[in-house]
Structure formats: structure tokens, C-alpha cells
Image 1 (tube, rainbow, N blue to C red):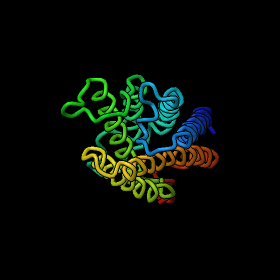
Image 2: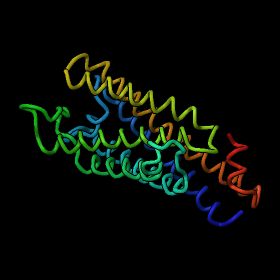
Image 3: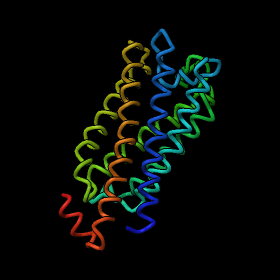
Length: 227
């Protein structure tokens, strides 16, 4: 096994653990709030959970970056999804989450439309939307990548789940309807997305170690066997 494979496997595991820590922090912070709130509201200015939420976002950024580096050679086999790589999509998502961490929404996290428009809320909302979209795109790319049968189906299912659930939660927030259910939808979408990244990093690490142990077997043959 080459040192590069061992290093990438270690980075993937470390990234997964950082992201898992972020998920624990988000759920712990949410458990302290007795009423329904959207996930971003945990980090709103003046909220007692603001610093914990910011820490969670930064852990996602750090962990996601490590996982992205460990999968930098992975590419989808579907033409449309070959626009970029999973690593690039994860890097975009991490960059957007970093912006969201540095620019939290104002109290109550109002949507930046009409009388509630502020540049701060617009920046935070746009960053969150870009981050979720990029993460979903990465899931789809992984779902159709060769040699990763173990996680392909899970990635496709989770991408659809995150897109649909987050979309419903966003629409409820936009139309200011049933915010309680909408906030739960957003929390579910966030949990699913973060959980995918945790599992993806661990599966990638296991595959790097396994294929490294098998020696110099051609990559094409390994991919065919894995499928």
C-alpha cells in the first residue's frame, strides 16, 4: 500500500469524524430550544446557540474539505454529472458553508424578500442554498461513479431525499406556512446530508485501504468487479 493511499484514507476518516461532531453539536443545540426553529436560526445573531452553530458549520467545512481531497480522483460516468467532480462539488459546498458561518442571519432569520430584505440575510440565505445544492450534486455524482456500488444507491436515495425535503421546508418558509413542520423538514434534510458525508468518507477510506492491500491490480478491473 502506498503512503498516499494511507494518507488519503486517514484524511477521509478524520473528515468523517469532524462532520459527525458537527451533527452532534447541531442536534444538541436544537435540543435546547423549546420551540420550532429552522436550522439557520440556531446561528442567528443574539441566539444562545449561535456560537455552537458556527462551530458546527466550521467543522463541516473542515471535514468536508478533507473528504473532498480524499476523493479528488473520483468522477461520475454520466455525461451531465461529469461537469466537475464530487470533490469540486464538495469544495463549493464547503466554501458556501464557510460564508454562512461568517455571515449569520439576523434575529429570526427572516427571508430576504420585501420589507425583510437585508444584505446580511440575503448573503446567508444564498450561501445556504448554494451549499445544499452543491452537496446534492455531489451525491448524484457519487451515485453514478464507477466502482462504488456500496454507496451508489444510498447516495442517489439521499440526494433525492435532501432535495425534496429541503425544498418543501424552504417553500414553507417562503410562504410563511406551517413553520413548525418546515423547520423539522430542514433539520431532517440537514441530518441526511451530513450523515451521507460521514458514511461516504468512511466508505472511501475503507475502499482505499482495501484496494491498496490488493496491490497493483489494474484500476479498471477493480472498478468492474466492484460494480
